[in-house]
Amino acid sequence: MSSHVHASHFWLNEGWTTYMERVLQQILHGPAERGFSYVIGNKALRNDLERFAERPKYQRLVIDFEPGEDPDEAYSSVPYEKGANLLLHLGMPPSCVIFARKSSHTYARI
Image (cartoon, rainbow, N blue to C red; front, side, top):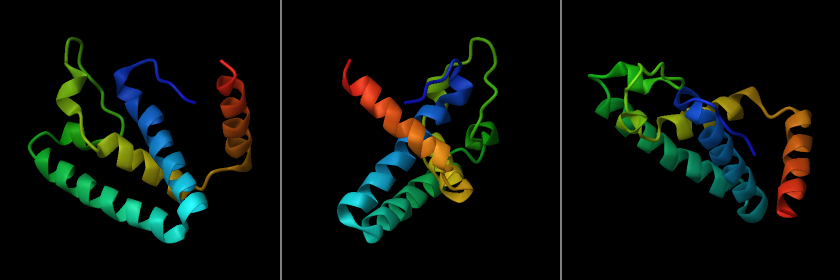
């Protein structure tokens, strides 16, 4: 439903997807399921933040990669969890819900 042009914005895909997955968990299984998923994600995020303590650049939501730098070096739960938490705390505006519905209907036919 979303995409990025540059690896620095990987969180756009993964944060959005993680957020929407948790919204669906709440719809299908209730708020406790969604909340528990955030608890598990928070643990993974804390572990990765600790793992990258010596490389704080990789703790950021948006990483400014140098030319030739391998984005796989930064792979972690950070873009998933920080992205999902950003969307959670901003609250999803109604226009995003409408966009998500229209996109899912459009791409379901492809």
